[in-house]
Length: 204
View 1 (cartoon, rainbow, N blue to C red):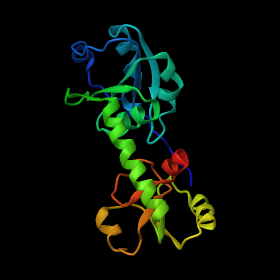
View 2 (view 1 turned 60 degrees about the vertical axis):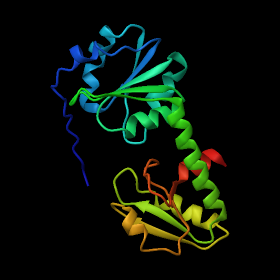
View 3 (view 1 turned 180 degrees about the vertical axis):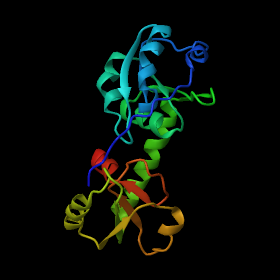
């Protein structure tokens, strides 16, 4: 099936509001696609800034590429998903600016350490699990059935593949005998009994 992608650029003028944010040192600039065209304007008002570019879903490779050139990051966009992923993957502090509301928040190394401890706890639960569920998303770009099959072949414990489109905590409660679920899709699906395949690979 052919897919047509149409760029939707935001026309929100947030540059003046950014001038009030004080960020010290070299700053990496990252954003989502609708604000990408504004990064050169942002660079003009923030000294010593480096354009990383567009973050997309779980892909923050643009931030990883410049992490050794900057002291921290400025994320322009809504939500905490992207800035948290940048902080987790780069180990740098991330200032998040929401151009729609003007709200400014910060993710620091302490926040990342809390997340890492949470992931480590899930990993220990994965090692101790007697029954394991393997989650496969049907969403475009996240469908990883082959990875799920390969993981299942390696398992020395009973494991079952679950295919889903959307996922909630309540749905997982329908399978109380499953000790933990391994997610092959987006690495930041944050549910109690779910650990991502990426996190398992990173720890092991």
